[in-house]
Image 1 (cartoon, rainbow, N blue to C red):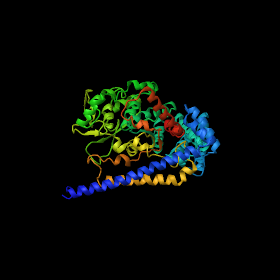
Image 2: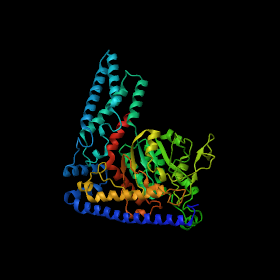
Image 3: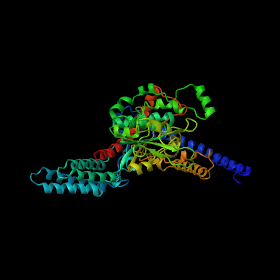
Image 4: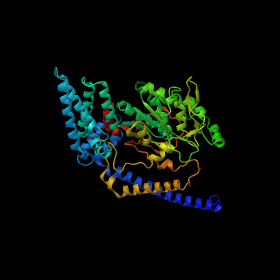
Length: 528
């Protein structure tokens, strides 16, 4: 009775108003600090040759050109890997020597005539070295982001030697004629569990999601596109494109010319406005169904897509009308018969943009029917699981996530105060007063959002909007394509060939700093 009284409603409104006023003030101060840091970096820190190299790095048109400029920048700024600071160089050297010794002995024994017992013993010894600590996730800290953030392009010799030796040892084990197929499979399965797998996560972001295509193209050209791909909201559409097509097809599809066939946001403005006033959503899921199938090769199911490409496509969606519902990961293991285009629309069902939908599946006769008889409707996957790291780890043993983050409400606040892979931080940037204020303000804003969520003060009751900001949006590597103000005004528009070309270049160039670590990580995974 107290909660339904007018007094309670007035006090609640007063509390929410006070919190929002405090947050508004902190937001203004936050953006002032961010712009101050940006101005100081560009006008004071980046001067002379440093500034010229930094601008050239940003304007590079190819990965080859980027690496050449990055190496010049490393030499000019005297950037190098500090062996004893962020990773254990001595441990990696010992493991590399152990693997090299075991591999060479196995190769010599295999080449000798009439020494099958010795060859088998050396092959088993090599397998034991691989299993017993030489190959685990982040062995010796070689995947530590802070270590890779020390230089723009200069590699660490110790890490390169370790990765090369691990790959060579795995290949030697695979070629051994003195171990049975079952024995090899058991060894590789064990080290695969220890190493874990990598996954690419594509965030939501409305029209900013087209930058994911540039990220995908950059990874594809470098030959390091992970086999597990996850997407939420706009990212679900791009993930579906990757999960249903082969690499040779993607090289033909991922071009700016594909904008001619994108019609997701087309429609009469006044009809859409009337639909929004009458039904509460701008787009119609029925109209989206045939438009989405261009990305999903028709009505493929998750199981059919996996059989066709070998990629594990994962799409996140959230049950409707459940305030604290957890996001669900849809893939060939959890929902094998669900039609991918219906999962994409469900994951993109942002309140106000498109209505919640029911998942559809194929029955044994190949007919499209509701996935369940319960009538559960699903909405935007970004509400709870924009980057489903825990779900991917549970289902697929994913230990390394590459996140392409383009959500407009995230890019405004996201920054790496300690640097990122291939993007060293300036000394003043990592330890200055400004960066401390930046971090404190961000944490305080999150505190108020958490309070609104915990006290159930965010309307409407079926949707906890505070959770949209309170998730963890980063991964092991976070690729953050640059966004400018004009893009925020075109969040619900289809791209033109020219605008898609710009978005793809921005996404592709944002991928280049991280390629060194991704290539090293996937070299081991692919060898396994």
